[in-house]
Length: 506
Image (cartoon, rainbow, N blue to C red; front, side, top):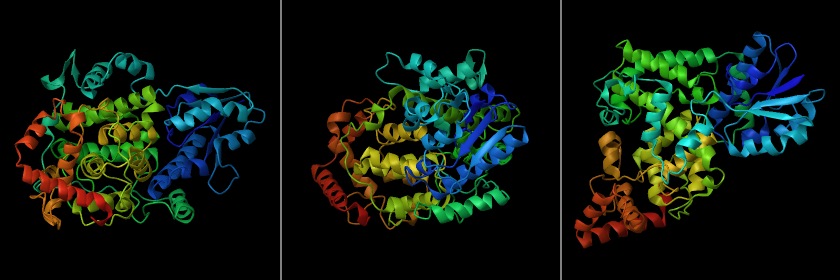
């Protein structure tokens, strides 16, 4: 008999572990463990999603003939996988597990599990990703800097998605320049998708509310699907109602509108309820059927086979040293409003509200508002990386760390992205209605009521001149700085210094 360990982000019937085992003779083990739930203080909705999805998946496995031993939180004495293995492996000949999504846990699998289990541990490559680790390593070999666009083109060829022979459909690889419209309200917003809650959901919500009350967030408006069928509903809903306008408005932000036309599919893909290739094929078919425009479909597919696979490749290529990168020398703590949401900056307050209420914020809210502000402040990369890992339902270390450390904080010196994603309030004003509702003035940079993003942006540019003056994508910015009146520059820098002295007051 072999024991198959199924992790909380491996809820897929195509999991390699299942393919290696025999339903008649082998046994599956799943467990809700304190060490995994509490090593960072995950958002309550993230825990509820994972626990409920795990329990539903275990029920699906049993219904198809698998023997599943499920250990629910609070109903067993195991805190870690090692303590679990010491007990569940009696009489087993081997343990089988699929490669996990976190360096921390993978090290324990490779160096500690066999001792605890007392039998060999076989760790299988996770074939659910579209780019194998050795494929990415070969592609990255010899490159001083990586560029997602070129990797993405390789993945288009590799998968055949939106391809006509060797050429991209539509004659160009990337339609990002067509995906930057602010939302003005003319296009009707999609209907809300709601899921019925069953006994498993209710039990898990009660458990998380009681056991994890000190974790960030609220369960009051838990909207996530927790079964593979509900995840498929979410995919169908996106393809029909959201994808047609996703391209135009994927960078837009609107007060009180938390999702606009975004898919909300990343949590389901990242825990295994949806297969990424199936998701991409559904979007591709919508284009070929005339149900969605190319700029929307290409932009969506790029996020999955481009960014998603790209950051995973970087993670496993460079860990563990990558997690320690801090090329800009940042050391500030995160301001308190990253946990409370209480700030006078309306854009930040809106993003925090969405985060606290739903364990969600779309990529521009993360990158160009909360992330951009952390970059401008000079926050310690480790602090903002941990915050993103804690607060978002789709956040697992392999995807969160490179996105935050590399793309948001530019802490890797430009290995992942060619320029820092730093911006003043003008960008936020262009892509949202946030500034119209804010007490700060987005049109000025040095006055007492000036938008904090403005002076902090120029302070960032000024203090990192040595690192970025030679960057070809930053030359125009430094030319603009040089053209400014010295008195104006001094006033902006003084305003920024006052803000940096007490960022919690903003």
